[in-house]
Image 1 (tube, rainbow, N blue to C red):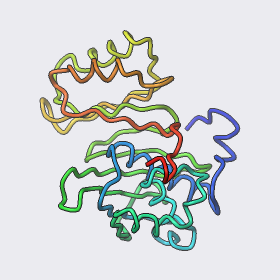
Image 2: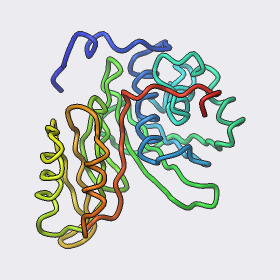
Image 3: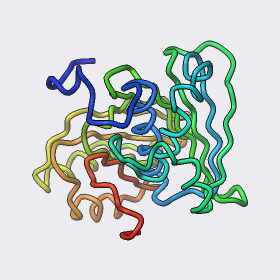
Image 4: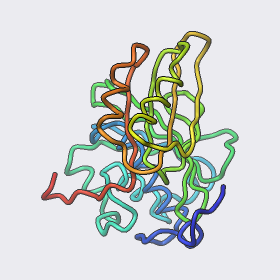
Length: 232
C-alpha cells in the first residue's frame, strides 16, 4: 500500500501493545460494526496465522471486540472489552482458523442476531502500523482500507449501476478515492465498495436508495468519534 502520511508508518494513537495486533484488530472490528449498522448480538471471530497463535497474549481478542463495541484504537476501555461485551449482551466466541491465508494477521468475523438473522461476514487483515485491508464482505472479494469514509453497496448486477453510483457522487460534489467491484455471477448479486474523499452526504444516500438494482447500502467511517457509554 501507499503510505499517506507519517502516521501511516508509526501507527495511530492506541492502546497497545502492538499496532498490528491491537490497533489494526480494533479497526477491523469497528469496520464490521459500522457495516452491520448496530451492535450485533452474536460474534464469531476466527483468527488465522499469527493472530491465531498470539491473540490472547497480544490482546487481539480484546481489541477486535472493542472495535465491535465501536471503540477507537485509543479507547481506554479496550483492555476490558470482553467484560463490556458481556455486559452489553454481545455473545463472543473465538476460533482458530486453518488453511492458507494471504497474510498472517487475518481475522474473519461473522456477526448476527442471536437467532442467526441479519448475518454479516467480513474478513480483514492487519498489515502493520494500525493499517488494515478489508478483503471480503459477505463472500465478495473487495478491497478497502478504512482510511476514507466508505460506501458498501450490495445490488443486482445490472447495466448502469456503476454509472448511477458515480453520478450520485458527482451530483453531490464528492470525489472517489478508490472503487472495488465484485459479483457472484452475471446478472446475479454484486457489490460495489466506494472509498470517497470527505463526508458521505445525506443526498448521496438518498440518491442511491432510489436505485432500482439496490439490495442494501451501508457506511464504514472510522473517522467518526467513539460514543461513550453515557451517549449510547
